[in-house]
Image (cartoon, rainbow, N blue to C red; front, side, top):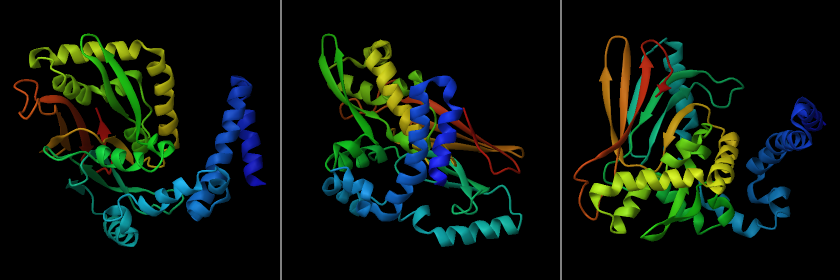
Length: 307
């Protein structure tokens, strides 16, 4: 009954957007307030999974994919105890600098993720690796063999025509939006392809001196394509909307790189430096750093801003 009332109220609040907006608002309230908790609690035995007609395919997902169980999420009680110690002792300016997850992450660690209103206690920064494959690749390879429907949470298969070369088959990274929930922009969605596209162009014979210009031109064409700028941008937005990780301020799951930390009396600054991939079997002769994202942590706060 409470979900029905909430769905009605959500639809009523969306009346200005028309019938489609009302239907979407009501449906999302039902999906996240009723269907999602049931699936989380019952897994493949949820009647919603059974009714989908995909129970057999989805069973492998529930049996196989337990994300991060050997890291923070696998030690919830210990994490609560550690955060309680920091919070209770008013121990501030704690920042974890780690790696091993094969991606970039920046966010805060909450005192109790089971609480109605968890509070940030410390900052967590994770750097990608320079020579190992990405978290995105591991998940894209694994989930794609289980279910095309689940694969959409990780990537979208994208055929990119390039004049004089042919069609490049790439996987558009959607994992970043599923993970962190940052609302996508058209530029950000396209830029997420840049490093992979540049590498694919190099493998197709484009001279290194022309790689950056060719990559930029191909991305500009993609952004002008309504299928990319409307449909795929909308899909990324939907995935960002269902993310339940508001403490992750930024995540980039498919680029190699490293982090450089500068500490002063007023703030800590971490520059996440994304690297272009190898050209053949050698490092790029120029343009080694593809882009830099900066995380700032002011002294005395458990907060991080990204630029």
